[in-house]
Image (cartoon, rainbow, N blue to C red; front, side, top):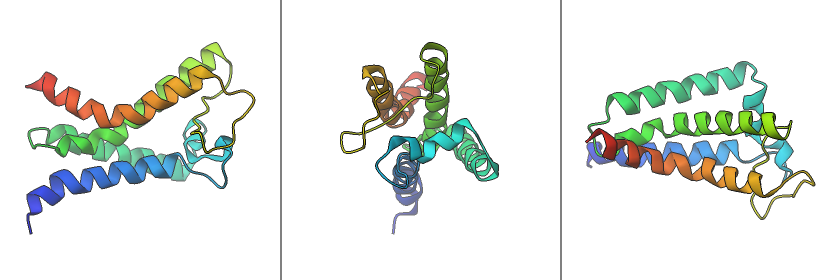
Length: 137
């Protein structure tokens, strides 16, 4: 069993996929019930979740010399992207961002900017470690 591969490839990717599935699911297909909405009004459980993302992110940035250990920082990129894009939507549209896939219930308030920023929020955590590692080298 190759422990370095497990710790640097499989565990970070597993954590990232679980993180995205956790945030972008809810009690039903209405995007207003998805768990990412709790980040905008945090409670104790949300602060624990955010703290774990920061700890994983710092581990990933500290051990960035490993091949894919930087993917530990992906939840951190996801949180920053979500909070940053939500602030843009609060300023422009005076509401929180709505991230919905084509299988979810579409709110009447959703527009093309929600879809574009939602796609960027989901894809950025996968791409940022690669870009970051190329810049550091």
